[in-house]
Structure formats: C-alpha cells, structure tokens
Amino acid sequence: MIELEVSLGERSYLIHIGSGGIADAKLWRRHIRGRQVLVLSNATVAPLYLDTLLDGLHGLAHASVILEDGEQFKTFDNIARILDTLARLGANRDATLIALGGGVIGDMGGFAAACWMRGIAFVQMPTTLLAMVDSSVGGKTGVNLAAGKNLVGAFHQPSAVVIDTATLATLPRREFVSGLAEVIKIGAIGDAAFFGFLENHAEAILGREPGVLEQAIAVSCRHKAGVVARDEREQGERALLNFGHTFAHALETETGYGHLLHGEAVAIGMLLAARLSASLGRAAQADAERLQALLERMGLPTRLPNGMDPQRLLQHMRLDKKSVSGELRLILWRGIGQAEIVSGIDETAILDQLKNTAAAA
Ligand code: NAD
Ligand code: GLY
Image (cartoon, rainbow, N blue to C red; front, side):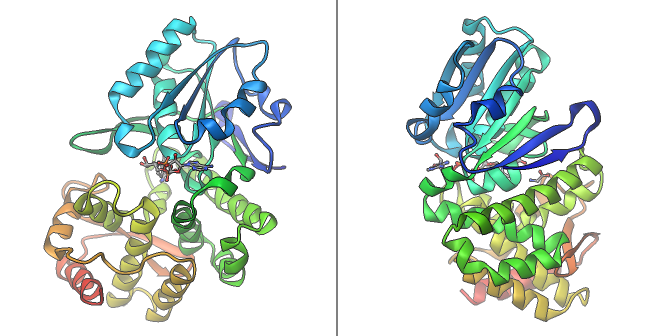
C-alpha cells in the first residue's frame, strides 16, 4: 500500500493507495470515529463492493443508503434521505459516513457529512479513476440544482481516502478513459516529467497494468494533496486544477448531462486552452500538439462535438463560477508542466479557437 498525507494541521489525513483496500478493514477501521456508520453507495457499485465493506464493520451500528446511479440523482432530495437515515440510525456528532462510489457519491456523501450536526467524519472510498485522482481528495463537496451543477456545497475534508485500485477492473472503459483526462491534466499543469511518464506508458495504463496505474494514481494524488495543503480554499494555486474546465463546463452545459463525460469535456477543454495559449504567444504550438497526441492515444476526444455554436459556448464561459467580477479568467499554460491564471483575455481570440476546433470536427 502506498500512503500519502494531505497536510492540513489537525485536519490532516491519509490517502491509502493499493489493491484490496476495501477488504482490509484493519487499514481503514482506525479512521472510523464513534460507533455509528452510514455507508453511501449507488445501485451499480453496491452489488460489487458493499458486502466486502460491510464485513469490515462488525461490532458497529450501521446502515446503508443506496442511491440510483447517475448525476441526475445528485440532489437535495437525496441529501435529505441520507440525513433521515442518519437520524434513524441514532447517529450523533461522533459518527462516520463512508462514501463508496464515484465522484457523485463522494460529493454527496461529503456534503451530507458536512451538514449532519454541523460536520461529522467521513471516509472516501472512490471506485472510479476520476474520483481516485481528483474528487475524493481536497474536501470539495456538493449537490446540483436545476440552475446548475455543484451550485451548493461545502468544503469538508475527509478523515481518510481509501483507494482500492482493484475496483478499477469493473469500471467501464469509457469511464476509465474519461478519468485519464484528469491524470493527464496533472502532468500538463505542473509536472512535465510525469507527462513524459504518461507518454512512455500509455499502453500499460490503458491496459490497466496494476503497477503503472498505481504509480500514476499516486503521482496525481500527491500533486493534488500538495496543492490542497497550500491553498485549501482556492485563493490562488488551486485554481490551476481547473485547466480546461471553463471550456469543459461550457461544453457540458451546452450538450446537457450524459452526452459528454466530464473527463471527455476536460480533454477538449485542455486542448482549447493549450491552443489559445499558443495563439496568444504564451506557449509553443508544439506543446499543444504533444498534448493532443497523448489525449488521442488514450482514446480521449479532442474536437468539439458536431453542432456546437461557438458564440453560445462563449456565453456559458462568461457565466462560469470561476469568473471574477464578470471578467473571464482562464487557466492557460506556458507549456507542458506550467499552468498559469490569466485574466482579461481578448474574447475574439477565444472565439477563434472555438471556431477552429469546431471547423475541424
Ligand atoms: P460517477 O460517480 O457518476 O461514476 C461514473 C459511473 O461509473 C457511474 O455509472 C458509476 O455507478 C460507475 N462506477 C463507479 N465505480 C465503478 C466501478 N468500480 N465499477 C463499475 N462501475 C463503477 O462519475 P465520476 O466521474 O466518478 O464523478 C463525477 C462527479 O464528480 C461529478 O458529479 C462531478 O461534479 C464530481 N467532481 C467533483 C470534484 C471535487 O473536487 N469534489 C472534482 C471532479 C468531479
Ligand atoms: N477539482 C478541482 C479541485 O478540487 O479544486
């Protein structure tokens, strides 16, 4: 097992990475606070891994909430259902919630844990690649509103993250590849050597070879843990993790839930950011081409879906949560491994990139 720490003073926590973590109750029982445990999962993940997890809970009062599978169930109604179950369990402040699933379950479990009695312990057990390298680390939790994704939420750090890499064996290929976009992002924004590692091991990673995969997950988590430790509330450096995301959110909004997976939208968004950086003279075009080649080798999309209207995408980008005082602020790069925050970009340059990428589709 690989062990990393997210250093946040008395709220510091460990990330355990390795095969068989869920079955290893000795590993995670020490992170359980109190005598009551609520497990949150969904109808796809629970039949695969819930029994193994419940075996490790002997001696503790516990209950499970199994939600329907999908982003559309990341709602307040389901948060109420989780909180009602905590009440029925007789949970007090000294209880623990375990989130077993992908980012939807992790975000909702974390938010319910932040709300119950103003905050109880929770353990993340991510089962998608995206959740392992991104959403389970860093304490961003939340739910969707009809008005938009993740509009309501709280910062609430987990007590531990248990990454059982064996769960990736059952993850559908498209979901796995989508998660790879966030792994590539880590290399793109802050670690050129890691980017090279991904180029050299693309086939092994796609083949889900355990050793290489664990290494890639560990490097990604170590990078994110460092960023979160230095800038928990996204006052500065943490924003770099949103490389490609303003474009991606615009694409997700325009295509609607369920057409593009998050990582797929991020892949297209990162390439747009890289090309925009080159067109503004901030980075070499050759770096954008290297990024494109790696994304394509991993099976990720690099073009806008057919029928996208660049003007509408730009409108969505103006409304992104990351905009500050109405001014569009984007994460661009100086080249592989060097992301930067840039404000006041000429909108015609953005529009040109959107048009070029759409025209190529
Ligand atoms: P997801 O949770 O919907 O999981 C994707 C699919 O894989 C689902 O159908 C799920 O049931 C299935 N699945 C999960 N684990 C599986 C396994 N081991 N075997 C078989 N099937 C499995 O999607 P996701 O990509 O993990 O997460 C997306 C969510 O994460 C979004 O709601 C997004 O807003 C959020 N997110 C949060 C953060 C953060 O910092 N908190 C960061 C990025 C994304
Ligand atoms: N997913 C971006 C962040 O955690 O800040």
